[in-house]
Image (cartoon, rainbow, N blue to C red; front, side):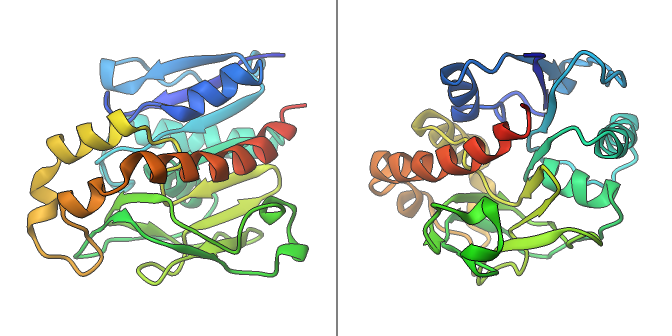
Length: 233
């Protein structure tokens, strides 16, 4: 199998558990570390899929690599190459395919429940997922669902949490978290937790039963990641 290409935008926001999942399922991957100044390769002939990780940037920021990644997403979508977007990556997919990114004055941070936006029987991505589960969140901006895509998950804090289009998925939450990643984000971005946002948990609340929450998170990750890698075949 050709490798999956993963775009990392911030050093602490790498693939985490997603990398372990790909290894366990014998899916090769290569890292494009934008945070280290690597340019965005536009060729698609040597890869089987694209994954875009999170970041603190806005999709509307005047950064050359953002424009290049959106162009790459459009090109891959036209060629039916599976794409996965996580947080900023999901916003990039939405924007590239004609969606709108909304700048929110507050943030959604911590462990918040998401719910199915449609009946499970209507979409193969939801098969085997519980109708409600609790992923990890850390974002302000959010995306709209582009024309031709289907919203599959939402939350009380944000209407759109995930959409699918063809063999691609955009998620406005994090399934890739590990215990170490959660601790690092709380340490690095602790100032985000001090504003008293309605949908932002405090650090001690985020850390409660952390291992159990991570274990439950990875069970849901296995289902959604497993559905995505079917498109690689």
